[in-house]
Length: 387
Ligand SMILES: Cc1ncc(COP(=O)(O)O)c(C=O)c1O
Image (tube, rainbow, N blue to C red; front, side, top):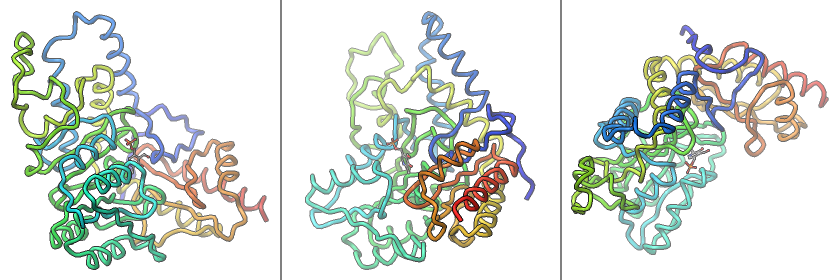
């Protein structure tokens, strides 16, 4: 597998090892420039035409659909994952004795919306306990077997956000169809770093944010809704999602109908003149590099991190239990304190996150072998100092 050579597309100095995309992705130079132009344009509002309310939104929708391997009609633009999941929860029925299935320690935006749905409908939230062998797929499938038709919604990610342990979404999706549960996926910690295919996993809803692996802006995300969920009720009632909203002279005709597909779920002020150009520039670059090439690149770096960290006495998951781009380096048995270690690494300009008693390391297209070696050298000296 040959490595990508795209670091120069980002404002990343050679002596900074930024291995923390799971926290926040860097926007590339193209996006920084697009953002500058976008702000300047807002200073000259007479240059903003009616089509500028719609065309960039459609380009963004198309780019997201391409990365999701989904149809463009199903993509709605949101400000956050929680907004997308609130839209899903608003439109997925839950019977009084039914459960929403989530994973232990899942990101809060993937839990609060379901707690609220369960309270509203008299159902419950069922949490899949963290498996001791790291195999979330087997754990989720076993719980789904036990719950059977009482599983109303299953809401899981492609990998756990805390340490990257992967789930086989095709297998979970098939189990959802067997028991008749709606299948909801939060793609935030995956899309942009590795291939994703809505059709292959059979999802009903896929939500995500652009500010991590999609190297886009904060406060912008998406939700893809399956065809059978496209005639539901949005969580807000803005003018631009209504039929004929591009006819500015007739807006107070108050249309009952919506624009086609999942556009009814677009957030208010979806045309966001400052953020959309930034996201579009980022997604164009990711698309040109290709998800397969990015995940192959990340996989080489992640394997090198795993081997190096294991050699230093840290705990790492076996290859089958690792995602291409995101992994936890466990500190048990090393005598190192996670927060103190993160501070030491930051002092060496190695940037990672601490989650529980693991250091979470993220590798994306812009990372290099030199970044990995800088991380391993810093881990080695922290380990030596603790002995
Ligand atoms: C898995 C996952 N989903 C969602 C988010 C962000 O959620 P929201 O857009 O609701 O702030 C994060 C942020 O860390 C995350 O890790």
